[in-house]
Image 1: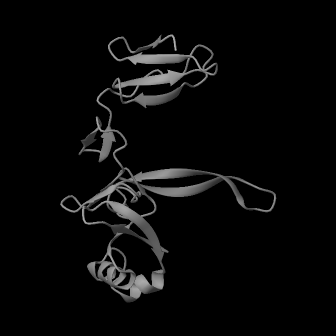
Image 2 (image 1 turned 90 degrees about the horizontal axis):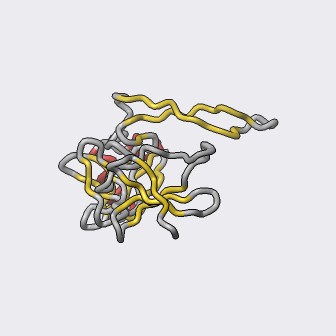
Length: 177
């Protein structure tokens, strides 16, 4: 199956559909302008093809790491291939994300107004770098969230204690909340 992202007038992704490979092949082939025109005419809208296995400039190849007794996949990992020609448009289209025609890339949704697009990696980044300390004393992971009101990272431990990230000291401080 081939995947196509439907775009609104601002190039925001509003839907992703699947189209049979036979239809794509009969109308110009993968990532051809002809196939995109056929999909746009057939499904009424503006569509751009998107690669299901493209993620942040890498092509992901699923590998089964565990199987159930009946042989079906239980757990998967992905082999990441950088520079693989099958990686198209940098990332798979996400609803709410955008297509940037000048660069021919799909970019994920901007979740917070303070975040800025990094055009080298095509992802939105917080104005404060992501914390480098991801676990607390007993090596349990923090649950981290972005605090848009205060432009900072917050984390919570297993007892739901709240901590704020201090990028200058690269440490967490209890907020008392």
